Amino acid sequence: MTEREWVQFHRPENLAKSIAIEAGELLECYQWRGDADRERVADELADVLTYALLLADRLDLDPERIVLDKLERTRAKYPVEKARGRSAKYDQL
Amino acid sequence: MTEREWVQFHRPENLAKSIAIEAGELLECYQWRGDADRERVADELADVLTYALLLADRLDLDPERIVLDKLERTRAKYPVEKARGRSAKYDQL
Amino acid sequence: MTEREWVQFHRPENLAKSIAIEAGELLECYQWRGDADRERVADELADVLTYALLLADRLDLDPERIVLDKLERTRAKYPVEKARGRSAKYDQL
Amino acid sequence: MTEREWVQFHRPENLAKSIAIEAGELLECYQWRGDADRERVADELADVLTYALLLADRLDLDPERIVLDKLERTRAKYPVEKARGRSAKYDQL
Image (cartoon, rainbow over all chains, first blue to last red; front, top):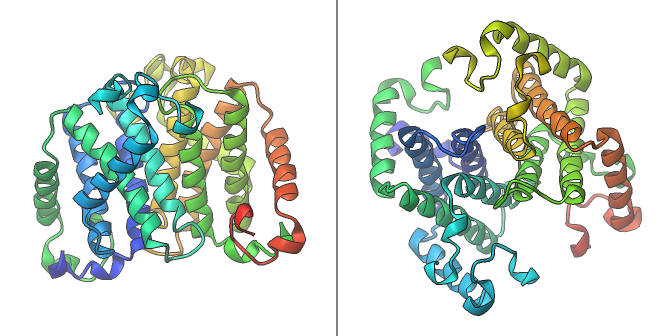
């Protein structure tokens, strides 16, 4: 993206907005029904991921690292025994 | 996640909703100002990425592949000559 | 709200972010299932409406007026004959 | 809207999704900068309001009532003395 000098617009706040905007477009694939065209979903999901990776890069965060860290914390909060087959928030278990 | 039998809730539509929900929480870090606590952003960004990767997995999409494909198409739509230093949509160039 | 001197934070951009954030919280009521607790929905919907009305006020827009104007334009775009019982976008009719 | 038989698509969950989608389009007006075209904002804000009012109607909620109720609760949580000129969450005051 450097070659287009777009980095000036890539302040973290703008990237966070962009992720929310693209997440809305992704959700639009499922607005009125539960299934959606796979190609269209791929396209919108790519936009979400792109802005998410740009934000990680901008804040010097390792995407893989933060995902694994979060997974670890989730595991600790939702013990297998209690959470099996439920979608309740951990503090309601 | 299999061990918690949560996969039953991971229909693509629900994952698309989850991405939008987490994108909102990420945006909340920047609700009233342009900077945000890096740890908190890392946490919310991890949630967005996790659901995005789960959706890709569910639809048998390769995250890296769709991001690169989209980048290629973006490159083609926004020629360097015209797009330098501008944030306008490609059809307004 | 004037008495709390919060107006300084109510720049249109921040209000637009706030609407998206609250819309995410509203959506969270329906994250894993199609029904939701009515009280909780009322609470989150109130937040969406509040920020939407604050933004209208900030831009000197009449909420009722813009809703009716938009409805008029929608009516013109989706003729009853063609749109009955369909959820397709008007340009796909 | 009855004349178009669209009510069948207006399940609360779909309306909640629609609000989030339109909130994303509204946010797009401010994606890269703090100001936006007023007409475009009016248009997107109208969409947010329309779906919000449809959801209220669907759940038999009085929009004005829930906004005022919420305002009352906010007033109680953020005492004027402490909250003046701050944007912190009430539990951080």
